Length: 112
Image (cartoon, rainbow, N blue to C red; front, top):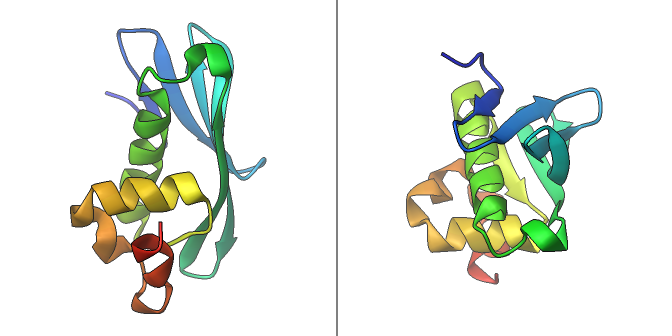
């Protein structure tokens, strides 16, 4: 079983929270190919930027990365502020995640 903050899979994809760098990191076969950067603000996590290297793009890895990060935020009891357009669009596509976004920040999702 994986420790909190990591998601190793049998397909070579690993997602880990790197709090020292304030980002979730996505690796494929040990090579970092993506990240979701964040800032913490009290009881909120503010996602500022998400990227996945172009050769790895369009394989659903960005969604896996953001999905993991949002699940981790829920587990930690943090509200999510999606300043990153990719994170906002992901939440918009998955309305069951909207409850993570504090009411005063939900316009970021509806405008995505």
